[in-house]
Length: 478
Ligand code: NAD
Image 1 (cartoon, rainbow, N blue to C red):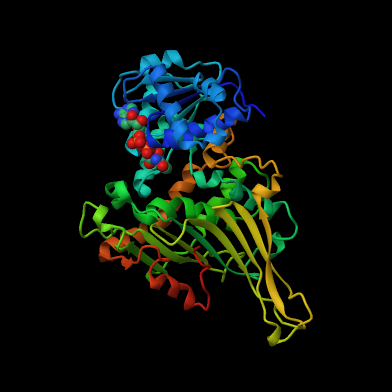
Image 2: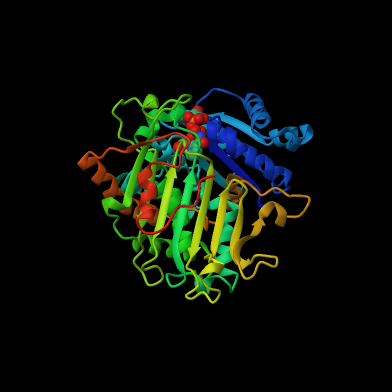
């Protein structure tokens, strides 16, 4: 279904994110027929360039980031005609008058802040001062949204000086993933799961986001961040909230976000013994974390695992184990709902027993996998095995295999439609920092050092112990 006509201004339109994700995503939406005839995309960045130069640059980006089987020369040409460019100085007055003339007042206006976080406030203020934005314009703010509670509050305040909350779209691309939304569908559109979705039937939950890449060229940035700020405070926290929240009364932005906020507020403080921090070492082929840091004594964590308790009726006694890291064995993101075993086995110990597991896979191969226990086929008596009831979205979409839209393209279309459900509200972000800050402050005041771990492993041994000591184990990273 096409959206309303729009002007989408991408500040930082020449940057890595714009070239790698935002514009290829928009191209896909264009091919899907979702972009109305007179929709326009306006790149705005520091470089001096005209429309022609920008179209060339983005044409090359599409060549690089979209597989050639999904690129059709004629379509690419038509898409590129939608692109415009204007140089802009976020820190000064250069370019703003031209931008004002360029953006139409009678279509949906969206301004995507795909620039470094230090410029978010400047852009909001300048859009307001130059009277470019209208009360209905939308701004899309990239991560990171602050680096602690104080800076997030300050940023919320600067944005609020120029825009209402209903105009601000704080992006967390994890929320745009098909499976993440399917998690809500599975929970709230089936009668099967929700009655069991609590501490009485769920033993524990695991949320893993594991990457194989290291920090490479981003060492200087990452050193000021670390896994806690870069991944846990936002992405893992959002996944935890969607898994743990109460059913909202409707699928409406504030109803959903109110419930997520309640989860964050119900999180217990995490004692030190429930947190494991790691930093990857070197191996024969790859350099260590430290090799890419400007600080040879850096204490920044590239891995974190933690046990989190939620103090409310639904979850008391059911821990959520979170884990994320770089340079691990495989690239994999998943939420694992580990159900309890049946209260009594009628088949006896020899039959074996398997508790049900629901795995919500975000990458690779987005899908949902429910493991159920059945009898081992054959004449060997009553022996139990667990088998997957698998739903991979590529299959569910039929043999033609219509592509599952990438998170960015879906989220940008939501911005144009004015739907904030999958974007973080200001109070949610602040609440998440309020929970994270004391943990980070504790490490700093004690001078805690992360444990070194082997590249290509599943993180430090201590992370395995975090579950072992509770009689549990992580699902393998593979
Ligand atoms: P980048 O450094 O590749 O691009 C920055 C862009 O900002 C360029 O287009 C540059 O011209 C523009 N810019 C810089 N200073 C400017 C100024 N004074 N006035 C106007 N424009 C200016 O950065 P990126 O990797 O594309 O990241 C952009 C944002 O997206 C950042 O907030 C980053 O944290 C976030 N982000 C990036 C990625 C990614 O994969 N690259 C992933 C998630 C979030």
